[in-house]
Length: 271
Ligand SMILES: [Zn+2]
Ligand SMILES: [Zn+2]
Image (cartoon, rainbow, N blue to C red):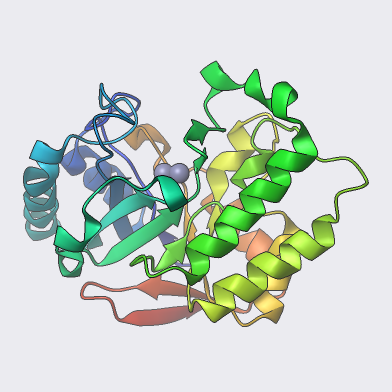
């Protein structure tokens, strides 16, 4: 089975490690056929003053050039220029119209912030019990749906149920099935792809993103699926890929979709 990984990070932020070249070399050594570098797109100095979360604005150009250099050096693997772009909703404070999005082969859309609170940050996890799980889950899926149908240049919605990361689930009063259906409808309406993100298995929730029931809703809605490991260290570039492919098959997908350089797509049959 062909292995792909369209979600990886480097040491260009304060929370990752490794270089672009190391990620590509590790991916090639792991027999991955397509790898995307998707470093966190720069945030404003107000939101990320130390570039712990996102890469600095002044390395963006160099980042793209490093990927092009790695692509030239490793003709045996397809290398995509990508980025992971936060959805900030009403709190967006960057001039995104000034960005040349065409230079990216793949843009991941991610909801990491709810009203500027990074809900998946372990250092700010106390806020979960102050706000309440049901309200957070509701807000998360509202924002996910808004991001899907926004005019943001997202190709793929990343880790679609990241809200489960800390294993903090809503009460039975929360209609999770309806939330999943809304997410799938929004992804289809916005013509986004979604990813199976294998990193969830390493967190408290101990399962891949998304849950099989949500993945099944995406499949029923005709939303194409791709796969990423969200590795923040080259050593983990292929972690969980086999499990991700298995989950896709269990959810009824019979093919996986891979973005190509330039943005075209191809599909790989799922055995
Ligand atoms: Zn992310
Ligand atoms: Zn990521």
